[in-house]
Length: 336
Ligand SMILES: Nc1ncnc2c1ncn2[C@@H]1O[C@H](COP(=O)(O)OP(=O)(O)OP(=O)(O)O)[C@@H](O)[C@H]1O
Image (cartoon, rainbow, N blue to C red; front, side, top):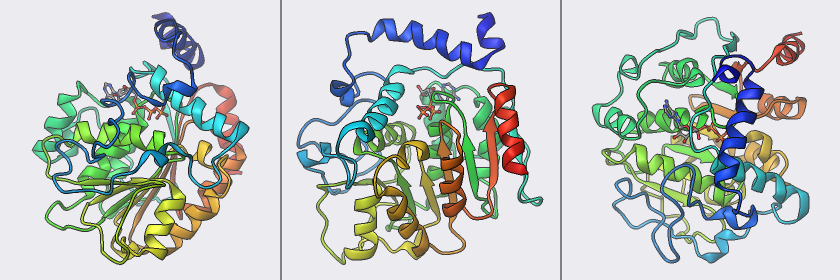
């Protein structure tokens, strides 16, 4: 495993080659049914999308139209970007083993930038810890080591985190989302945005798994989900795509944005490629209270991602899992 100890890129290539052999027959377009990868797969037609062990109440059940991309997602290359991201999820069923370090930019000198070597150190709710161990996670990954103390900090701290696909970002923010919610309050407290329904569902599957011992409910806000306007949702976590989420917040008014404690943007690099989603995300973000914790995750880094991130995440700690010297130069540029 020498490649895994040195160059992260080589480690990924090696792992991808090994995994792609196993799934070589899986076409990208058909891979929207997550029979491999995170979580436990896509619900069958008509089955509630409520997380088993997570939602005990009826939830908005998306119709078959949910397979249709969110506003502006349709067509050509843009959809390919989301598909390719989904394919990456499905391909990398295991954590990428990397010994690379995490570079943290301290924007907030008061933030508790320490790291944790075990999940116990995070003082999680015992049932959440049970869920984490139940997934076979014995100790935090590199990005989780550094990101979790920030994600769970009190007072909350905003975060922009970038690390390659398969390094444990999703598990990190799902764990944080589940820690932030108060199960005794029956209204949305966390919003999590993904670029497409399929990607939202991948994250939903992780949440379902991790929350199996908790009484936390989740609902998907994706195209086709039916809700009664002006009847506030009871689920603590709303997971979905920007267009529908904006509709639920501004038009249908089923989410009170001022009660949202945590706002998560996943796959920001894919999101910015989906027409309209940047604007929709910014419009949702503007409705949130100043106390709301805002976090953004991206598998890749470039100027466009940073520009978007700086628009939606005020005063963040910026964290990047170093891949090679080139990425360090980029960090210097951002700092400059
Ligand atoms: N601490 C951990 N210990 C063991 N496995 C883990 C841990 N954290 C995550 N994993 C597993 O590693 C794989 C990748 O994790 P995850 O999906 O969170 O990565 P990611 O960085 O979000 O990837 P992507 O950018 O593709 O979403 C998953 O199969 C997940 O179950």
